[in-house]
Length: 196
Image 1 (cartoon, rainbow, N blue to C red):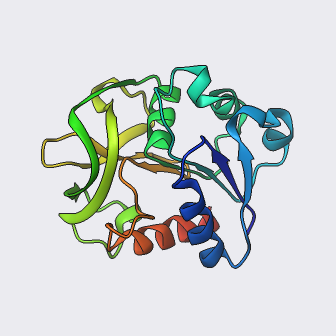
Image 2 (cartoon, helix red, strand yellow):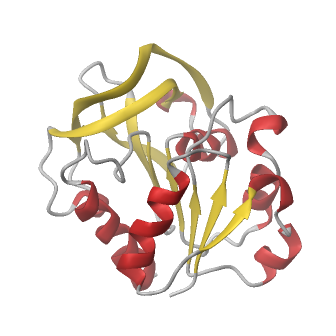
């Protein structure tokens, strides 16, 4: 399985790389978001494109690099998975707004409620997941086919999916040791991408 991880200059990127490498039995390729070969990746999409966490606002090119350009160029059939900043990028790509969270949450697990989407197969609704962010997607501003599929106790968007497309994202960090069911969720991502 060929996995490409877009790095937005975050220390958690390599946790994701190692986690997906173990699940896919091959080390993912990592590319700096500022140095993406957009035409090359769009012409031959990976089996799974992972958008890493990162600092800043996703609408700021200094933070997002060429990632939004890449998302516009990819075919709808390309499997995508975003984590934290990666979710925020997908929200912006989907025409949504990214706004300040009720409060910054850094290094705290919260109970994540979900709607039973396949991304959460084997993961109980209300399971704790580790959060490290101060921004959230405004679910009411997203365009179809994107929709929220999980929420925080304060009803902030914690996960997105695109109906009819192999694309998903989470606001929390499944690769963190503070997310006990995170490994199962990442297994689901790989399974769903392979099925696509």
